[in-house]
Amino acid sequence: MNRRDFLTFSSDGGFRVAELSCEKLYMLYSDAAQNFGPTSAVRSLQSPDWWGEEPPSVLDTANRVSLLNGVTKSVSDADVLVISGRGWLQDADFATWVSKLLTDFDNHGGQVRFARGEQYGG
Image (cartoon, rainbow, N blue to C red; front, top):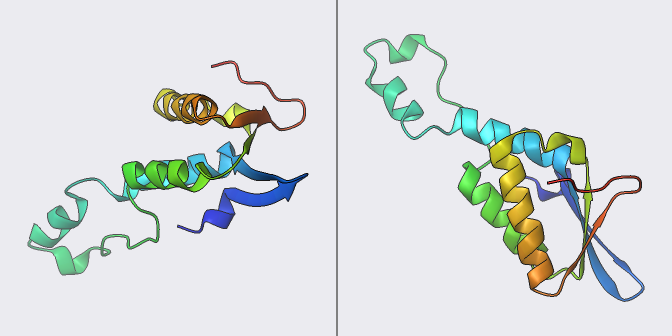
């Protein structure tokens, strides 16, 4: 997982700012679900014709839980969290997790902002 693909850090007037792209994070979130099912690699190797199939994907992306926990930990030191790509919150599970991230961040004294012209409707 390359955090720079969906999460960037900067400073603004003494505040630590994290900017999270929902679009890019959702792509990784979806890939993690498709490529890291609990038995996909085992099933392939147990098949008698496993050598005739394409091997299981080996990606730098962890499973969904690890991915989302990593994002939560990464933004925990920021003062401001800027969210972009609100339109990518159509998946109910993903939207629920993002909502929890925003609520937890706010409850711990962080300030949540949305990219210009975006609001959170969830």
